[in-house]
Length: 187
Image 1 (tube, rainbow, N blue to C red):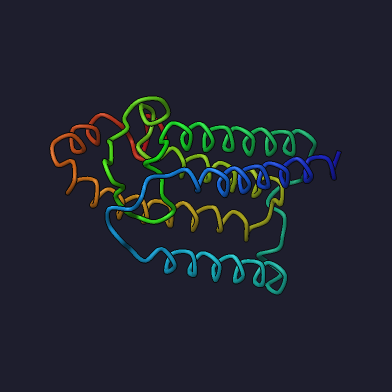
Image 2: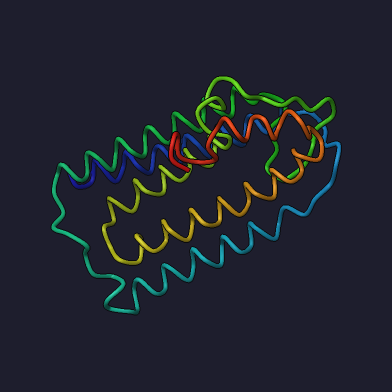
């Protein structure tokens, strides 16, 4: 069971990555240009730092609780639900999706489907996938990483929202009043 849970989580991340690469070819052209590498570079540095700290700082590599099959099944479910959320949101967004913070030609404001539950369901799904990994790995370092990852997703969502408010001033502000950012009904 130990290895099956890990394999399942890895397969979820592989499916997500392959899906993202394939669907990236079917998006509209960018209407605006931005630098998408800054946030990616910061993310890579943070991941490397957390891996290093978990291996070299005893406290951070310590278990939060006794690992069990139930926790591993929960980790698998959280990861899988996060994957489903991301795929649903990405498909629903269609050609408006971009890996960078940009507007597309003929950009549309999407507020239905998964976007009726949260304004940033792709980030919500990715946060769930990271949370699933943290539940599986079960260390202080991964718990801290989930918080840092959440803050990073929130930061990027706020940058996107500034762009969307400028492009859809009335519509986006109304949508923002009705729909939470990352966690349905909460935040």
